Image (cartoon, rainbow, N blue to C red; front, side):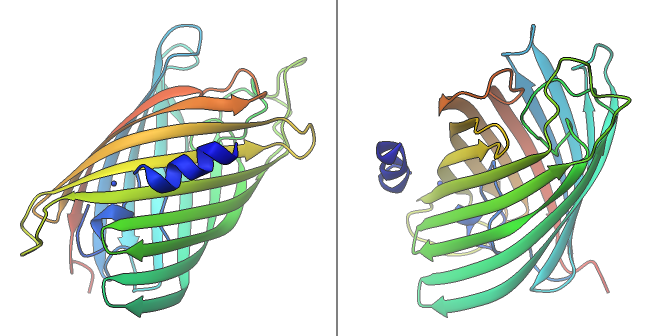
Length: 270
């Protein structure tokens, strides 16, 4: 486990008004999107460890109210229970409470919260509030930018709502979940930054883990990713996560690719 965390620090990379290398693919940074801006995302996730290939589509709208507060609204659709259908939705809010700035570097700290609903049956012990479970989550994010390298860590705690009509007899019925991550991003291009219209190319390596405090089961995934940012407004992500260690079985996200397009509109809110 120690070697994996060292690897994340030494191997590493959307909108450039936030440092490009902080726009992680599988996690959120402590920084927020610009004030009075709106972002629109469409994400596709494909999972291969399910009985056969299944996919999930996540449309998302993001709003930057001010420099400290932003919110996401998501919908979840998938064919994981047979026919492609709407599964549920989620609201996510993030508040930045600390900013320390220096030349070519800064440190950010934020608190976040999420509430989600899902009509999916409960099959696994993992709590995933982006489509699979209804519940609440809260936590903290810390992000450090060091010139072209950005490092971020997240600690969160989730509680799943009891849905007795959808929790299947004999299947795990998770209640609480501790989540943690360590993310690194590196700005590869441009080598010399001149203006916001230059394309940005970033590479990322993220470690994504969870522990069920009730059973003691846990896992740790490695998630490399690539990202292109065009004209400071359009972002394209591609990543893949796979399990490096753990004993939590029958997870939906164990072997999963992520493909995302994001479009940002600045200064549109009055």
